[in-house]
Image (cartoon, rainbow, N blue to C red; front, side):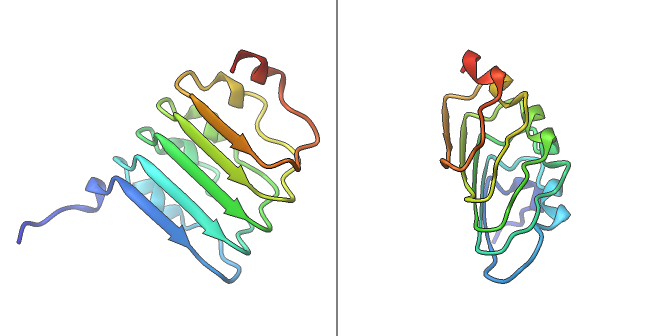
Length: 120
């Protein structure tokens, strides 16, 4: 059986039913391309989530998340972004500046869309 390192993970489904922050250790997955974060009670995301430079798809589904870290706008290859968080009112202002973004789906709870969405 061949060995592999944690840096070789390309997809991660992170699910937690009870209250728990997404662990900062996911930032060590430098080659991660797909990340699904699902849970009823996820209070926050790692503020440096933008360090996942190879991420292409990000799905976030939480009943309690209220803020998306602004570092998400630093993920250069992000193509698909899906956010389903009923209490989320705002997304980072520069989220529309993600150059590779081809699909975006954000629940209808937002108070307003950033001006940068005019470019998407």
